[in-house]
Length: 97
Image (cartoon, rainbow, N blue to C red; front, side, top):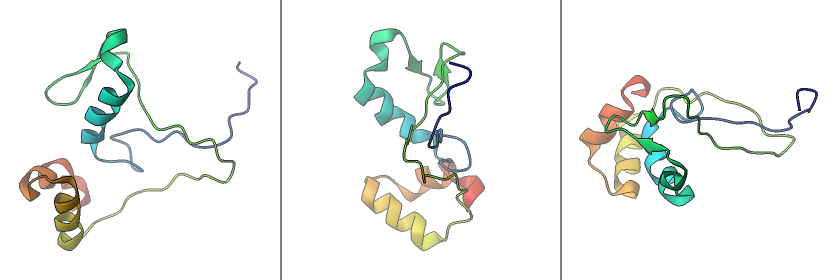
C-alpha cells in the first residue's frame, strides 16, 4: 500500500479547500457513520479522536486550492441556499470573511 500512487485530491472539512466544518453533519448522516461508532460533538469534533473524514476526488487532473476571503454578498447567497442564518454562517466562516 505504501508504494501505491494516489491520483486525485482528498480535501477535508476544516482545511483550506473546505474551511466550513459544518459539512461534516450531512456527510456523517449520508454515510451513516454512527453505524461504525463515529459521531460528532456539538462543536463538530469527530469522535473517536482518531477519526478522519474528507472528500476523495480521484480525477487525475483534480488539484488542491484554498478558499480565500469571501464577500458579504457571497455569505448572504450561501445562507439563503442553505436555509441558515447569516449569523450562524458568519461564525462558521469567520476566517474567510
